[in-house]
Length: 215
Length: 215
Image (cartoon, rainbow over all chains, first blue to last red; front, side, top):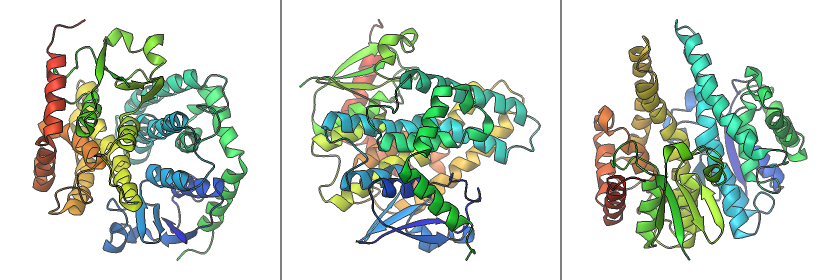
């Protein structure tokens, strides 16, 4: 079985690990599965060949024996369902871990991406500063709730799971903003994720990929 | 086995079916499972009793024999995993249907909610109109891609699945904006969802609930 994922030929973050292929690399490292990476140039993201893999022209995609998947939540869940190491065996614990995967992408990530988009795409508007402060408060509301639930625990629900993997990667995007550091237990939680050997291998792989000679 | 979900004591939409309990009601109707609904008053959403079920103070939650879940994606996936009717049996088709669940909540819903939030929460700002037009274009980009993928098909990937259920409910929020009608195949897709007997039962149940005498 060969697993092939796609990634930006050169990630806009230059290898800081924020592109979403890092999530899939990390999941594959956690379960010990080798994979190949096919680079996609920016101009090719919206071309028919790539749109046939992901109709929204994004990376990563996942190919395995004719199966094609997109959406990191779906890919990570698929990997976790086929290999041990990312989800607990007990059905109830498993369902709760999957709940955290959805919470990461549907409750925590949207205001964080809205904040990032406002910084990136609307920075030339006269109202940008006012808006950023509105969205920062929305992000803080979510972080406060997540911080309260995590408390002094190591991971969100028992042992490390695919839910933590997704949540840590979603939170990482906040690091330059300083918002994460307002919640020390969340900052420590992200650090715990980054200290995992599988994360380190995934990070190193994407860094090497993003600093190699481009296409 | 008793399934209990929570819903707003009175939905802000007055019973138009946009509150997220409708997704879970619809899923339970598709698989023929009875359920009970416990109303939660707005002031109680952020109180400890409800936060113990959903740390983000949202509805719906799902309780079944001591298992507690939140996030509609996770709840619908759990229901689909336990009962026939919402996911294909073949593993690859199943993984692709789950991909559409994540696409609904992580790719299509965020710009739609950003648009709805801008209309609702920032309408008093002098720059609101300019921003709405920026976000409307982001929504259009996603709808254009979704419309191209759907084409003339009835559902997103083969037969109706939990992926369609989530996608239809996410798109419904756009109806008052007129944006959905710019893509006739998507408007027809949403209508097909609404014509399903299970959807009709779910819609009628939430309407009766939201127009009953409140707590």
